[in-house]
Length: 387
Image (tube, rainbow, N blue to C red; front, side, top):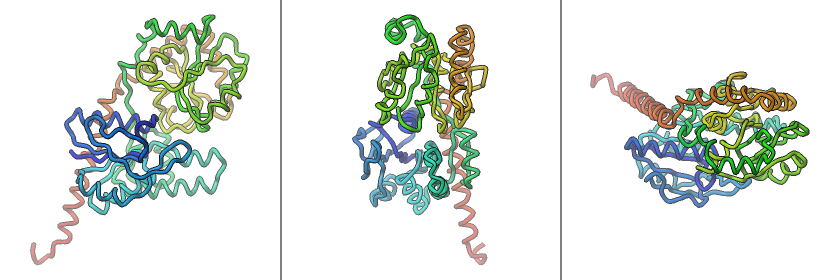
């Protein structure tokens, strides 16, 4: 199979979209497929997983490269002649790829991953929210299939009138993120740095940006026996540092690979604060690491957390609920361990290999449906005198 992967985000930018695209490319290489990657110009590597990476013109917006419509994209598609187009979190670049595929008779699978409309809603931009959903519907209407990561996203897209939807989650690296990492001597050193008196460590991993709502951690102020650890970087870091001043907090910066796995292993509890997650990949990584997770009862976390079994879902309208759940886990080590074990069990069937095989199955179904539709159109176009 020949797959054109068009992504609004890629290396060196690190986020959920980039991670899932990298895993998809690695899996396509593992299974012997061919691929070409098209991304906004931002200093991406020329190849990834053995596949060529082509950059197209982009502009910077709030530290992110935004791919611009470019006449060279249709030329790239026509030259590569893919069987299917994979549009990752499509916006301007992805929308153009889907439209070009339609003109060339190439089906597209769109991956819904960024809650653009949620951003407008959070900023109380009522008209912008309605406009954002119209844009989402327009972009995805051209795709043969839109894959959504959670039941909440499914509901939102159905309500917005987006057709042809199916669920597709995300995988997690069960070897990199593992409870045994807690035995690593480097984790002991890290725990001693964060919590020198043996306090319970509540950790966060992710971008430090407005939509992540890290200001919710202010609700932990004065809670005894707690130390906060934040992994990540982003535009809101100075403001968050100011808001959390006086709360014992260690800022570990952006981490990846083994360093990130060891950071998870140093936590006792994982807390996610943003209420706009379409999935919640860090929740899966925390569960794989054997941690109980606390997150808002909104979006992707609803599907990932079994409330009271492997973590807690708090009402995002009341930050005091976050504080209460943290206190419960701080005061009960046995409960933390039980929930952590349950979290690990919950992700055992979600390896990237399994999830990406499912994705290839979606490609195949779309190709079969496309071939059937072409055959039907061909029969309908045949004059009766020739039958």
